[in-house]
Length: 532
Image (tube, helix red, strand yellow):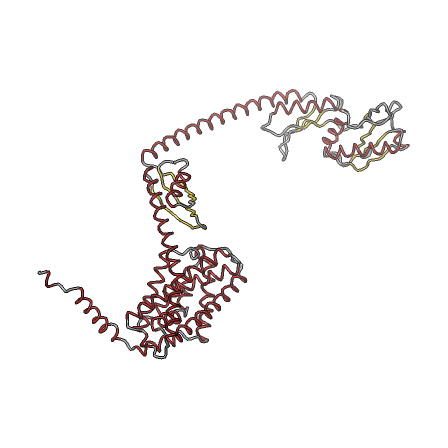
């Protein structure tokens, strides 16, 4: 093939212009398209009602974190009409169309915000779900979705094919961010409002400008709006430029964030390759002029201080603060798994040996305990009766009368507890019932009673516990009646602390003094069983 036979660029350009005129410009009914665009973007009851319902459903889906419910809202959202009308008005320099579209879009946004905010205020679910958070950080992919949606929407409108399906794509880019803006306003969370508002504005402008490009490609222009004036055309062009400014700023921010994510991903991949691992999850969130990185690293060995080292490297590369929060998940190869299994087997054998030794030790202690009990039974047969444990598992030794004093019985109980050991409930020694003598109470140099019980009083309280006395009398003996009553009350508190029920705490009367022996102490406390 001769190179001279190839068409020149000028010839190719003429052919392309002719193809556009024949296949695109002359293939459509321009008047019908413009009339249809005006009807679809008109503000009316249907538009208002469907906007309220769509945003309400979208807000409920976001609060429930349900993608299916959010998709249902997109199916009924009527946002495509006024947005395509805005793009067509910009393409034809029709001030009336632009004004009508902006009015419809503004009313729709206000209605949607009001409906969504009311739902958030009334809903018990107010926690930010992943579906909500996903629409607070615009990305380059979100912008592409809006651009492709605008291109498809304008094509479907001009060719009048598949408008309903394309409207779902446009609602995908607009309705969820609009509901998230309402969520942030309802909770006064300005961070969410800012992020979702930026996403909404970016998508709205991208769709409108994409529709303008397609309309111009199909030949729509100033000739389609004969009523326009030079002033109106200039105003529309100025509006077009002004609307492009926030989109350009958003593009710049998205580009910077995308570049930062690429650098962060490269640094993490390099660090993972050094240790033979890989990055399984990565999320980069801009926070002011800094970045927060949350990553999961699968690695065969733990690398200490890797997150701090990566933070320093990325901070120098990007010339802004980067906080890396790295979670390392240690994996293992076949050799490591075999070593771990061998270690686990050795540990299992050690545990089995310890259990066996513990069992043998327990058997030996049980044998010793049984031997001690046998000796104990032989000894106590001479001083009382050894009762077998009842439901509470306590063994009781009931002493014969006159065998030993209360103090000796109490000391014997302590010795028996040492013989039995801690593996069984401590035994109980039950002394025979008897009348208790008054317990002398010391008096200091000033004639005041000394505080605190004596050893004899403690022994008598122990005996009352073992007899399970159903209420005792505490009688105070002193020269002064008030001192006697106070002493009785003090001892009553001691008795109750030991679990002994006290029914009466009083000073000694005449009957009590007649019942006392002649050598009874002048200062004492007397514990009496009921009926004694």
